[in-house]
Length: 303
Image (cartoon, rainbow, N blue to C red; front, side):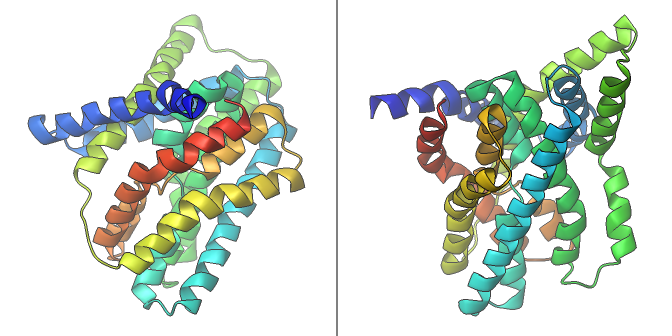
């Protein structure tokens, strides 16, 4: 028990305390998620990903393996959720909302921070690949699911071009392959912005939690939370064997797969009017309960 408390205190508590500062800033200072979210999305996160990939020992094979692992994990969770939802005869709108909250994890705000604290820089690089693939699938597959299959596939695919992290990965791969480096002023600017990403993402998580709304649908909420926090990491452990993930890659992949529902799911749910209050509730509940599942998982992974 003392070991678990130590793991929680060293790796998870700092994240929640930092997020709490964001929650208090939102409550008492009126800070809203939009501006902070845009800064994290367009500036801090891409710089973090570029720095993590260009300074890590990852090669192209490592990146492809993690990308494939992430894709199979998320799509498999989606398939299992669909089967469970149909078996429980969930109403169509709720089933779509459950799919969104189970498939896409909080790989950025929460996952990147936790991987850095628990496993170090190499795990952070692997986690960055998971984060980018998660974002790409969210803006394509997630958009199609949220629109109940009526969205324009071309528009969904083009939306990927609006994800700055994708460009960060491509540029990082080119620079690593060609052994290029930016001029010192630019390189230091990117490093400074990248270093700021982790605390900004944690504060943003707290700000977003302040605006979460509660709703009913207890059965569907329980299904979403259980799949996201229990089935997700369990499936990831099995898939890590299939894809041959070892060391930091295995730690990062499983940890990211164990994250609670992504806060950005609320944006998709609101945009397509798919039970946004239910989605916000699942995000909030799964985040609050996540230490109960993630702490023993970190112990298992050797944090």
